[in-house]
Length: 393
Image (tube, rainbow, N blue to C red):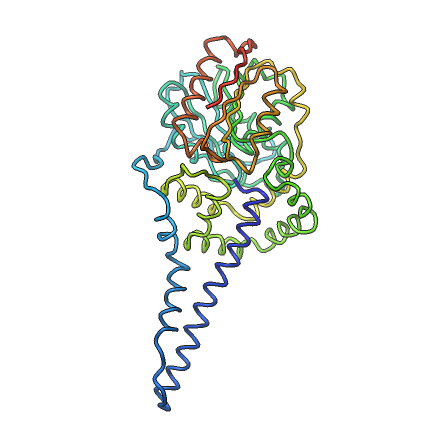
C-alpha cells in the first residue's frame, strides 16, 4: 500500500512522532533540573504540571495507538490467523519465494498477489472464504514477508512478473486464476505483457483489484502536485530513506505505537467502513517491511508502464474490482482498463477504498469466487472468454 501519498504522510507523521517524544523528554529533563535545584537550594516549590505533561507525551509516544483505535468501531470478525502448506521456490534471479497453499490440492487454483508494503497474510479473509472451493495459493513478493530480497538489491515489476511465473509452478497442471491487488495487479499486467503464451493455457482468468496500468503517480489523487514533487522532493526523499533505513524503520515502529501510522493507513487505504482490528492489522504489516525495500519498490513503480496490455487481445476473461473511495489508484484507472480490455467486466464498491478487499472482504471474495467458478466452468482456461458485463455495486 506504500505509494507516494502515504509515503509523504508517513514522513510527516514520523517527524511529528520524533518531535512529540523529544518534547516530552526535554520537558521532563527541564523539570527534573528545576526540582533538583529546589531540593538543594530551596525557594519556590516546583510546579508539577510540566512533569505530568512530560509523562503524558512520552506515554502517548508508546501507547497512543490504543487511544487512536478507539475512534473506530469494533469488529467481532478479526483477521483469521492460519498457516497453509508452505513451499520455498527459487526465482530465476535467485530470490527465495515463500508460498503457501490452502484448500484441496485437487481443486481449481487461485494465485493471490498482495500489494506493496504488505505480505501474503493480508489475504487472510480470502484464504478462509475461497479455500472452500479452490486451492488458494498466496505468496510474498520479493523483500516482503518471508521471501528474501533479490541478491543484487534490485527491484522491478519485470522481476516480480517472473517471480509470479515461478509461483505458477505451485498451481499444478490445472490453469489458475491470477488475482492481484495494487502492485500485485501491476505485476499481473506485466506478466500478461511478458508471458502472453501462458494466457489460456496456464492461466484461466485475471482479476485486478484496486490497481492501475501505469506509474501510480499518474492515476493517484493529487497527481498534479505529486508530479510536481516527484523529481525535486519524492525521489530524493526515497533515496534518503534507503540510506537511513534502520533509523526510518525505528521511526515507523514508533508511529505504529503512537497510532499515527493508523491515521496514515486510514487516510490512504480505507473508507469509513474500516474497523479497528483491520486497521491495526494493516498498519502492523506495513511496519514489518524494510523502508529501504518499500522505497526501492516505489522507485520501480515510477519507471513502470503497461498501457500496451490494454491494447492486447487477452484470450482470458478479466474481472476488475475497485473501491469508489480509492485515492491511491483512482477508480478512473479501473474504468479505463475495463473499457479498453474487451474481455473485462468491472465492479465498483461504495464505500470502499484502496484496501477494499480487506475492508469489505465478503463482497470482494464473493465476486472473486463467482468469477473463478465461471472461468473454470466456461472453459476459460482453454481460451474461451466470458461475456463482459458491468456490475456496479
